[in-house]
Image (cartoon, rainbow, N blue to C red; front, side, top):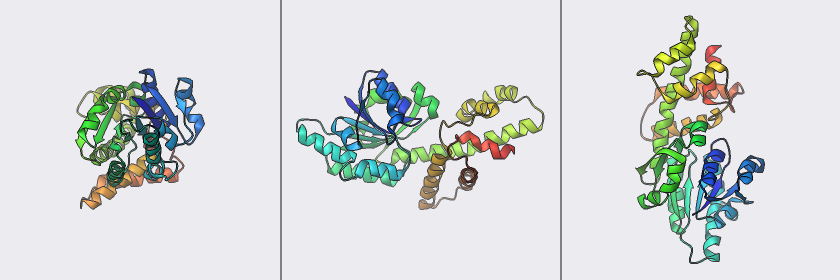
Length: 296
């Protein structure tokens, strides 16, 4: 199985590197070539466009920033992934149909559009966003949420097992993205709680590290409390997941909620607070940077 990988940022580079370490042949592309250098040093092949990635790959994984980036990468008429898969088939008519896997957190409606367009071109498509941050990407402990056809999900099991601690087929195209929205709604409220709780601990004179030992093992325990609260206490606001991308995700979740006639006031509050962080210049910091204005 020849792997193509598009997007070598905080998450993508570590995920692709795990596949290289497992022995997969990988062809990579990133808009900023320097960010792919580590992968090239570890044996990946470079491609000059998404089209060239698909031309040389059986499966192409995409993890980029925003839905507009996904559309550009996949649908560009001359340099997109689908045009590359068409060229691949022309050059090798006996080759199996290509598989496209979008791991970007994006709109469920876009996932359905990708699935239908790809299917019309004899290409299979899955939406498979992930959760677990930079730590999960490096350690292969991500949670992978997958939408699409079950036989294609099963075909890629060797890859899921390298990238994730868990992977679940959620249903038809778009179901993976809807599941990721559930994930982001949970994180948004949880991060607000973590930051306010640490502020309360400091204001009442408690030793924060000792407090964390107590509450992390109880009913209040969470991934954010375990992994991000210690970073907050150290003043480490480097991104495991950038605020700018999180605001995008919360916006999609609110759009979908409204489309389903749901009012989610907690989600709306979290989005406003993170948008304020962007205005303060923290858009490239990690989601734990919510503690900065709260603590001030």
